[in-house]
Image (cartoon, rainbow, N blue to C red; front, side, top):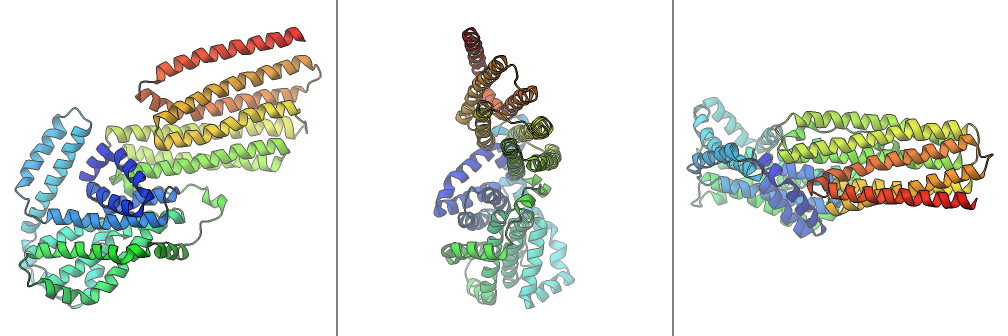
Length: 549
């Protein structure tokens, strides 16, 4: 509940601040601490960072610095929760219910969710102590703990499995702290459990990124190797560490929390200077990305990320960007085929539409399932925006495949007709702005920036003006040349129409951003006036040209 409340209320700010701090490794390390304390999960932080790394937004070395900070962030949360805060539990639960139930919505409601989640965590810690009484008094359980104390490697493996199954090293460490506070666990065994929890908590992000690119898989694998190496170094000395700490006038729970923090701080001191070497090691361990054609195929989207909607939405965004790369390649190939009369390339590009449909079906299924979860207003809106942009990309793919390439094959390549220099220049003057609109739309989709949305809409107006001029030039050419090839004329007008439709679908991503800022109506009104002026200007030019003829 804490993770969902924070991600819904402040998810965009977290992503923005995290992105701004990734230029410097030390800042990235501190960001990892802060984000993990907010999200209450180093696994959620690892999945976010893997997504950024897979998109090329940061290097593997910087991502590893963030994850080292995330490991320290979980220890600080454990430190806070080891204090006797049980008296705060009913207060936080009461305030959380009040804020969550009676607030109109927005961040006040999310803040109530966070308070309620923290209150329930404190209540759970107290209930575990009471509920574990039969286990603590059981001879069989005590014999198991004694056996684990004689084989600390087995204790580490056992705790790693528990942390992996619960997808949380923090939850496992808190359970160990709670059991040790009642003297059900020997301190040495408890320390071994803490080491195992650190290893197990690093496994879920590695599994979640198995189907991703190598750049996205490197940070979780490097973090896992850091932890495993740290456990191998610390485990032989764990008895000595427990013996050293036992005389201190501190309770078992505090000693375990301190050991958990010291272990992760030790990892930072030991491995922070070796980040570049770990980057190189993971690059050698992981196989190279597959061939480009296979690389462009859809990848399974991790539904286990639904418990953290912010991560799930980032996964969907990443897949939509890959879908956009396929559609853009289709458009580029179509125009190369048009220029070079390459029928093989045209048919190959047409076949890529099936790949686009597979992307769309996967993304739609994923987002539909995500929408059934408990999402906040912002997450629901972003879910709709991602699906809408994916739908527009799917429509663009259909236009390229069913109309643009079909016309090229039927009206140009099969008839072996040659376009005039003026026709090719007019089409190129429209094709290049559409490619620019592709890149601008992807940037607007990922950033949600208002200024970029305005630029994209202004770009659409400029395209409309060029499109009008191209149509007028072509109509004038038909009037001037009575023998002009009717097949080529139809192709020219069809391609212009297709480019206009593609540009409109791409520009649609800017409308929700402008509408939310209250700028859509005024902007459309101005653009409509400009469009009328451009149409009138084009008509005047055509009339003057006709008069001169």
